[in-house]
Length: 226
Length: 220
Image (cartoon, rainbow over all chains, first blue to last red; front, side):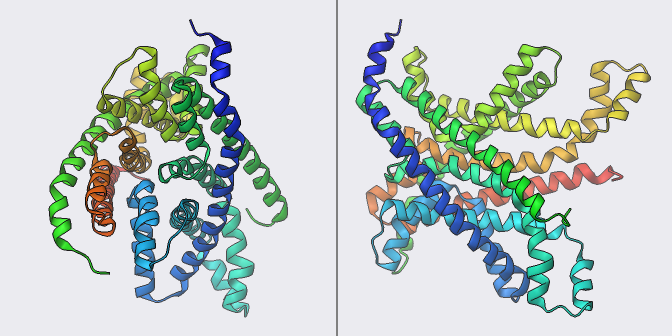
């Protein structure tokens, strides 16, 4: 029989840290997602307009990121990259670096798939109407591409939020680290990790309902896009 | 900074041992998870309300809890419930549990790709439930299933790196031991990354070959 009052008392280290831990988790995820999306867009455009060698480099980068575990990428960002560049970086910086480089690869694949669903005739027609390449991208291709990639990109955000728990392995003070430390102090792994799972669950539910709102708003902003 | 190939050569046997453990966990865990996912998908579409709720709850749980937390929960939590198991079996079990939730979703969307009119036509021809599945649904959804299933298998193969936190001697754990030994982060982590990358590319190629084979007779 579990004595709930004792359990409640023993869980204090968890209660004390949970808000701050969830904040760190949310913070690194949002920052990394933002940087990652900008990089993804850059990769996409590079792939579309650059010459063959650059296209190959982008393809190899995407394949390497998608073919290796995020944990290995984190360890490389934390141990290898600083020693190569001869700098020291904090675990949080290394974590954000790895998460954004990861998002860049997955995000550019999502955007590429979305771009490929736009009929090629549209770009041709825009060109025939005398539009410059810059305007073709800004007014024809990118708005439709963004609209079509919103559902998979918001899904990518929830994937990233879950994956950010791995940052605890390089000692970032996120929610998973708070849980780990609270387990060591209370010796109640079942209760602590179940509570942690519940916090992640709640955050992810919020994220997915928020993303449905964003999808609706975008649908209103671009009524001519189908 | 130069690359010391001697360190790579020295690390390879240990990494190879690690890859074998990784392959065993994935090789047992992922197919078990697919079986679990099949059961969950048929439960989710069944007429029994309790079964349906259990299957949908299971999928939501898997989709909304980080894999690392699930690994911690089973590795540190299960012994407290009186369930003693080795790290290897816990790794196989969590792989299967996680794979099952995702495969359930893949299978359910594949079911929906079969036009409802075909199911009604099969019923009107007097086919039984299992006959509809065997002769109408299953032959058609294979081509649909392969690409997402291969992605899922690669995802779970890569996620097995997380088992290094419970000292399972898989590839990432062996790599961590070697880096702690030699401090040759670039050489050891680079080799490990290449091994994972090569394996993923190989799995992708196999999946593609399978897809080509299955779609050979498809008219669509």
